[in-house]
Image 1 (cartoon, rainbow, N blue to C red):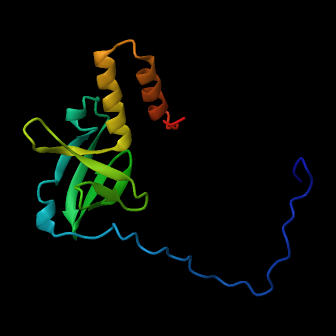
Image 2: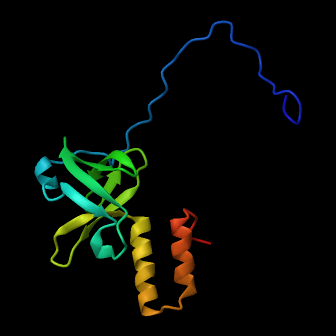
Image 3: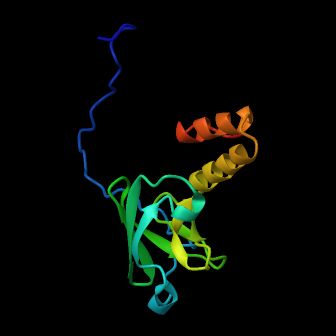
Length: 150
């Protein structure tokens, strides 16, 4: 019994059956491309990528498989990433967008999500204006997983 009384359970089904869970339709953005299109991305990359200027906290191992990238980190596990026409990647399951980050000579340096890009932008703002409390607050909110819009 809970604090408000017994929990109503309802009547048991006299003929219960197991049924498979419904599978949602695949997102149309999750399409394979040729493995040649993905040739520049495989490797071991710091995360966040060095050009963002944020200290990395893990490494992302990226391989190509069946027309998608397979990204692994000890923080997030393994996920497939699908190349989009705009050059970004969409992650399976979460449908989160990742952006390829290039170094100073235009070579691929890793991928980053919008949080890493935002933190990098706010930290660059702090470099220009060290007393910018708005930027400090936004970095803290992003790192805590809070909303960044009021």
